[in-house]
Length: 249
Image 1 (tube, rainbow, N blue to C red):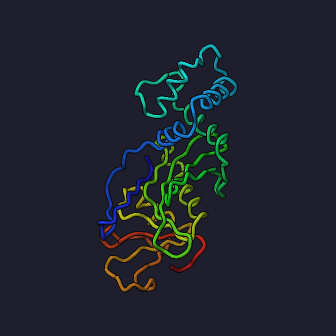
Image 2: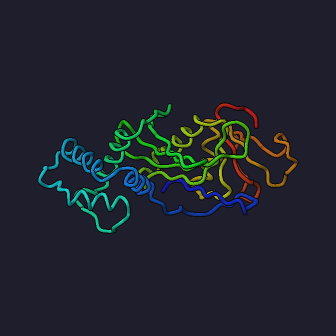
Image 3: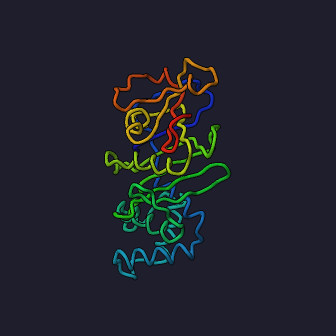
């Protein structure tokens, strides 16, 4: 897992946690697909992917094995057909399903994504169309800010993609979709670094000063200068806000 954020309205100052929260964004996507697709449609798409794209022998892609795969996706069983669930096959199958079922949008950073809406919540699922793989997921909700603004609830890139720059691309893709993006008040190490040191190089980023509560943005929010070393601790910050469209809050 590359990034983690958790919404917690009871915490008044930003809380930094060491390490990484264990989450499985690919499994989240596959579970969602099993809920959206009936087995007949799932089976049809799976056969086209494993037989036509990967070259599996049709005799090995039986309906019984596909039912096992379908149930495994939905977490209805722990056993899985090993020959169909190798990681490279699954991440490619995730991309194949998303491209067939959803209208994937292109971000300006080489990623493709779709948005799964659930009330006010929006789940962004990301893919790399060049390598045809699943990348990760960011869950958001409406933010109490002006315009079309979002707050991050959870964010995770695939563990195997750590250090390849996908975390930044995911965040910037979200920023293309909103006026302001607000962090949660619980940030693990990787996420704190992105908000405080990486994003400011590509967008406007402010932090809410925990010692100031005047209700006026010019007093309560401090813009981060990417040319200067960021030395603030979590105890000095309530949360971060970023925007690629606006120069002030």
